[in-house]
Image (cartoon, rainbow over all chains, first blue to last red; front, side, top):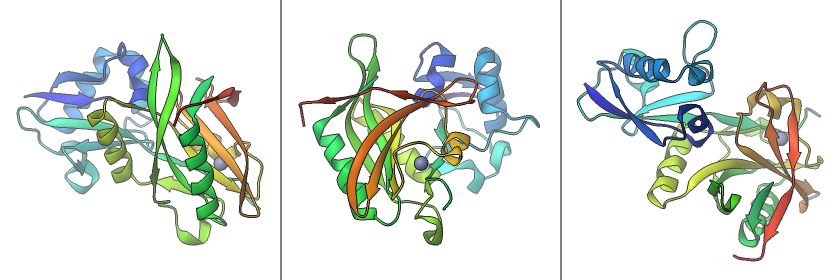
Length: 95
Length: 144
Ligand SMILES: [Zn+2]
């Protein structure tokens, strides 16, 4: 299955500046792992210690967060589009 | 350094005043290339997704809003170059919580809102080892 992965600006520097790349995989997890193996610098930004995606990256298949599908096991169709999306939070100090 | 359009600066200030005593948040859209440097030409305000009782000192952008921000920027030929939020009754200096939740590369703009009125506006980038924020110069462009 050939699919497209859209890369957020913050991670493009680790993928030779590309906005999106083609990847192979039958599931979301496989496609992301294949992508990460091509660009080792990006691996530490996507995966945490346990090999699970980091909490500050969300993965969308089409317009749907894969957390609401079957997670990394979600199956792909030829031409599927995965978008990597940063998780953004912050705030002022506690008072 | 980051260049912000006058319109973007004014809108961040008014979003912060409107959200007071809570925090506002949103994305900075623009370009970052070798010719022009980093320029935020407009902002994309979004709903603060943090629990309402904590919004006086916390903000979050939902994954869905982040997705729509990315898609909107792409459709208009812009990039997401950072994010902004307000600090109600607190200086425009990143908190430890800001640092823990920040991502490398993005610009983080903070506006201080003092008793409901916008004060100082600053911008920060996280070090690649995540150890600290470095302040970056903000240049206000004389265009809307
Ligand atoms: Zn903050």
